[in-house]
Image (cartoon, rainbow over all chains, first blue to last red; front, side, top):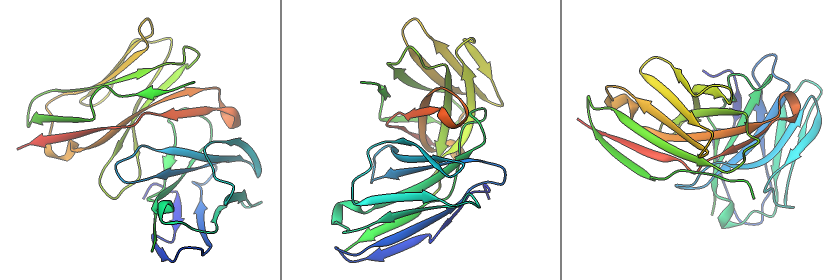
Length: 112
Length: 114
C-alpha cells in the first residue's frame, strides 16, 4: 500500500457519460497530480493541485476537470466520454520533490 | 519543447546479467531526476533519484548515472532477477514544492529471461 488511495479501481461506462475518479493523497502530502496512461503508452500529465489550488495543467481536455478539496482529496471529472478516453488514470502525491511522487494503484476506465 | 525519451522501448536480458536502461532528456534546466518502475497492473514506484550536482548514485542493486554534458541518464540493474521485469520510466524535474514540474519518458519494458 503506497498510501495514495484511488477509487474505484475499475470503471466501465458508456460513451457520452460522465464519471468521477477519486484520490486520497498520502498523509501530509499537499500536492496531487493526475496522469493518464493509455495502453502501452507513457504517463501523460493532466493536472496538478497544491493545497487546494490548481498549480499546473498538462494535456487535459476541456471535457475533463478536477478539484482538490480542503481535506486534500482530489476528484477528476471526465464528461462526454469517448472510446479514446479508455485508459488507466493515476493519481500521485508528494510533499516536496525529494523521493519523487507516490502513485496510487490507478483507476482503469473502460468506455464502451 | 521539453521532452524526455528513451532509446530502447524493449530490453530483454538473461537472468543474472546486468541491465542498462537509457534515457535522454532535453531540458538543461532540469535539476532532479528519478527512475520509476511500473509492474503490470500497478502504479509507478520510485526506485532511485539523483540531483544534477551528482553524476552517480547507487542503491541496492541499482545505479543511476547522469551525464549532463549530453543530457543522458541511465539506470543500471545488477544481477537482474525475474522480479525486475517491468516498465521503467525516467523523469526529469524542475522546481520544487508546489511548483515542481515533472516530465516522464515514454518507458522501457524490461523482460528478464529465466
